[in-house]
Structure formats: structure tokens, C-alpha cells
Image (cartoon, rainbow, N blue to C red; front, side, top):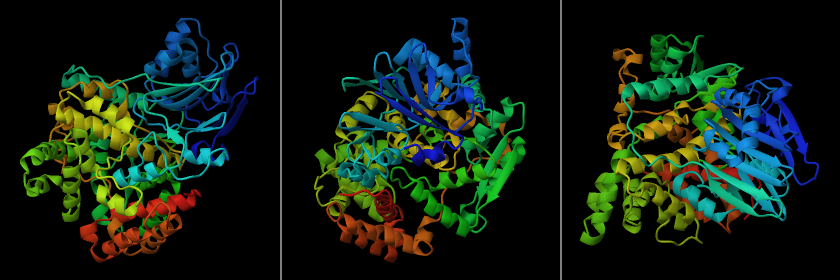
Length: 601
């Protein structure tokens, strides 16, 4: 299991076997704070008979350490891990809500013969687990569970349906049967008798407590400053958009040393490169700017490696793989990203389209409104609009179902063709228990507030954060996200949703918040995002790879209709603009993932 995760921690390896023989903990170390052996893991507290394995960073560890020191605790490490261990010793589960951190951890209590597993509040760090007879195994990646030899490599068909629906498997499911993802803000206590108890230590605030813009600006600067704390080189991704620019601008304002900014340029595909704009912003801020050109041949090679690095199938992640590799090549171990800004400040078209679609889907049922009214708001190409309208008419007329229609990759009808055993009229793509949790979360909230929380829970947590973690760690790079700082993000969520998340996706609230940090002449064009020319690559340079991946699904005839998959690929080859690249790409990734991880029906 440790060997399967060497890329996550190339700086050291540790193993703990409890005196009772009831627990074994392993750890791969990426040394970021306190590079000495004093911070090695698993970390022990012999007096309390505790052993901790911890993946992540605690950004308020110094303040917690000061408080613990004043109450009698002593420390031999200058890093954050020992602080987390001492706090857990004193407060157990209650300590989790005090951590301003991204983390996944396992704490063994030898005297109680009890294991605590926990994950950070937004789900930045993954934690997977599985039962094997009387054993429980857990790890930061599914591939490590498979490497244990204790987990049967069988396909979970409900997870396949979830992936086809939304482009990423929705937790707690994974593509491996009887293997699960611990929920964000969640903990699991495993006792010696085999009893498992679950809980949640943090909830999104329901109350609204708007702060003045200067206060939010200060909170954001504080967040960025905390995220720069490190004993190794740190930089910041700078794509040229408002989110990454805001992070770099806040860093320049707070950091005493020069700030390193990083951009990946694509000289062979200038239409997809934002290098010029990033260069302009870096010059305005005065960052130490690193621009790494990537040729098309290198780009294609990296795309293939990105797909093979996925720990769970996803239609996203290749772009993060590339910038992470660039950061690693530039000598960085830590990089800050602007991920989270779109979800907090309404940067997606869904903030406008989902409330409209929800309204028309409610009207369409009782009044038999012509489908044309729904087509007008469904978005996407012609076939995507037809698919969405079909699902809108089948789905329950609530905001969650409408959001899932807007975000879906394959329609319910298409999934029925690809997975013959699944003949449901409406497929949400989300496990039933989680659907109920999401409905409870958004009930009685403003529609814009609800869309923002769904974007965070369904899209950000289950796809973007997971891909960010695994693609960064593929290059032993820790990606930090100051927008998800545990003081800043809740403060933003307490703002009036109609102000912080405008329907037009302009993010004018965020732009206003940082308007004094950048020259006015820079301007902010419409959101573009970091895109790659997948459609043209799939028609040419990647065509053989795509065909092989889709053809691999024939080995899984018990699960899939290989002919339906092949038919979609042929349609794409004839009409790429109509079909779009995401659906054949999703099938390619799935086929390559299943064969690469040795999964079987």
C-alpha cells in the first residue's frame, strides 16, 4: 500500500504496529513543514498511547500551538502534525472543527482500541476505506486499497452510472465495489468489536451575517498569508483569470519576500493559451513570474499520463496535471490555486440557467408547456439541449434535480443504452441517501444560494477537489486553496447570495472586493477557463488512444453495451461539433481506467 503511494510522499516512509497488534498504520511523507525527523509519521504520543497518520496542512497550527503551550503541552516539532495530535488527545472529535485545514487523518487509541478517521470540511483531501472480513483498511487513494490485496477489484455498477451521469463518481461510492469515500466534514469511529459510528463535525452556516467589503478583503488577505506558510518553496498558479489574480495580488500585499507566479503557455495552440494575459498581470503585480511553454507533442504525452494518474475516473483533471508538472519542474513543492472562487462568487452559467430551468420544468408539468420553452434555457449544443429537456421532463421538479440535469454528461436515456441493466426513467447520478442530504441542505434557501452549495458539493468536492489532489500529488505537489480557508469561505457563504453570486456569472462582487489591487486598465473579459483542444486532438493525434479505450469496454459486456459506446464514437467522428467531446472522452477514460486498474465485472 505504501509503495502504491510513493508519489504522494517521496521524502520518507513510516510504519507503526500497535502493541496489541490490532492496528497497523503506514505513512508516505511529503515534507513541507518541519523537514526534520521530528515531524516524521506515524507520529506517536506514548503517554496517551496514540498514533497519528495525517495528510494535509493545518493553517492555524501556530495559534493552536500557542494555546496548547500555555495550558501545559510541550512540543518537539516545529510543524503542524504534532499540534494536531496534541489537540486530538485533548478534545478528540471536538478538535476537528477547530482546524483551519485541509486534511485526512487516522488516529489510533491503543488504550481504547479505537480508530478515528476524519476528513476536512470541504473535502480537499480524500480518504477511502473498505471492510475485508474483520479488517478495515483505509488510504488516501483507491489504488492503495487495491494494492493491499484485501479489496476485491470488482466494478460497482452504481458508481459507473454516477460517473456517466456527472463525469465523476459521487461519494460515498467508488468504482470499486464495497469501497467507500468518507464524506467531507465527516468522521468515522471504528471500535475493537467492529462497531462503526459516523458523524459530521461541521455544517454550512444557515444564518446570514453580511460583512462589509473591507472586512472580507482583510479575511481573504489573511487566508492567502496563512496558505503561504511553509519550509519549502511556494508559488501560485496564475492563469490570468480573476480568481488566480486575486490570490497573487493578496500574496504580493502580505508577503515580505517576492511571490512566485506560474503559468503554462501553449505556443502551438495560441487560441488556448492565456500566457500574454498572465504575463501582463504578473508585471502589474511585480511577481517573479515563471512561464513554462509546453509543445503540442509534450501536451499530448502529458494528457495520456494524466488519464493514467487518475485514482477515480473523471472527465476533468488533465489541465491540473499539466500545471502541477510545470510547478514541479520549477522546483516548487507547494502551489496556491484559485479553485473555489467560481463556487463562492457565482462564476458558472448554472447560477443563471438552473433557476430558470427549474421554473420552466415546474410549469411544464401541469400546463403541458411546449418543450420549446425548456429548450430555450437548457443550454449547450442542439443534442445536449434535447437530452436535457428529456431529462427535465422526467426529473422531479426541484432545484437539485434541475441542477443535476444542467451538470450531466449522459442523459438517462443514453445511460440506459450504455448500461442495459439500468432501465430507470430518471437517473440522478447521486446515491439516494446523499440526495436527501442535499435536498435538506438547500431547502428554504434562495435559489442562487442553493445552486452555489450544489456546485460546491456535487461539482467542486466530487470532481475538482479530487482531481486537484490526485493530479498535484502525481507530481508530489501540494495544492492549497485559500478561497476555501475555514475563516474566509464561511464568511462569504453568510453574504446575501443575490449579491455575492450574480446570475450573469460576472463575479462582480469578487472583482469589486479586489478592485484596488490591480490596475483598472487590465479589465476582466468573460470567463474562459483553462481549456485544451480536446475535440481536435480526439479527431487526430489521440484518435487511436480513444478508440482503444472505448474498445476496451468490450471486455466488460456484462456491464456495458459496447456497441452503444462504439456508435457514439462513430457519431462523434462524423459530427464532432454536434456530439461534443465530453461523452466519447468519458467512455475512453472509463475503459482505460478499468483495464489499467485490473477491475473486473
